[in-house]
Length: 477
Image (cartoon, rainbow, N blue to C red):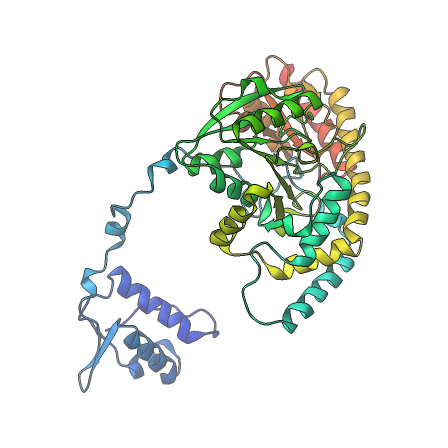
């Protein structure tokens, strides 16, 4: 018989032939008992050496896909007819746990390689501002350090050098008093929040989140079977008096409310700490971009005010450096530290020690502090440029909430405009805009747009906002 196999190029011929033969058997195109051509005939048919086809047959025989009969030939092994066909696989009675029917998609991300000329996607940083040579040296140091050590699993809490650097940094910059042993390194803030929920929340427990708020947190809590109650924010932050009495966990972004941007007032902070202390609830403080502050004095972290031991302080390097780093941290309350560590180890044991060692050296050498000060100037300029347009030429259509920190801002749409229509008009002009609908779990009060300006140079902001003004004027006419 002839077998239809396509060999692309001359690289790894045996692997190409193996994959196609195995695929034909698994899919049922080569049924059980089918006789295959000899290795000599197949090699001649494909224009390859006999050794190549012999290696392929031997591998498939060893794996049980083929059977050889001396003097008779090579056949597809018997018993493979019980393998499920593609149709039966798709109809298999596999059902995810019921909870996943309630879990929404956390965030809709752009397709790989898709980027508009002017893209205001939130949470994006400008990697061109990173001192690449300094980072390269730290990665080299980390690689040398790792190669000198044993090939063993590492401490689930993270590399000591990085934990020490984080403890020093948040102690000096965010007023969080802790030792390096108190810090647990995570795969971004999302994993830190997930650990907090795993430690504190049983299926059916009530948890509270901000409304509007961060969708991936709601999704993570729902996935653990929690009853998620959204609690509205106002210009002072979370409305503490609306918290459900039975809440086991409260998630807040007090330094820079996500997505609206206002800080939580001191009165609300103290009220939240008192509320949590009385009820034995855990407060998860997500300080996701508190480093970038443009107005007024720095706002104290909740953790710095916590005398009852109820706050888990969460931070990330996704905004200060770049999201692909996938490095964050949590400082849990002392009473829960051992449980957090167990949850961290069970989750995925530990993160990449190479990256952690490099980042620890980057911080201890002072490069991280210099980087933050450098990029803050750029982000401040971009924020001012964007606000100048939103408060000026675009003010007939947009009402910005001027944030005191962070690398994004929200602008409400004035009456008569809808998120989807504005986003749709802007896209053909190369402008990527994003609505705030997804940040609400319940009914929205107003419609608006989120502008992430971390990766938008001032010149691009000016050009894109001029285009947007022209589009909005045309639609009004």
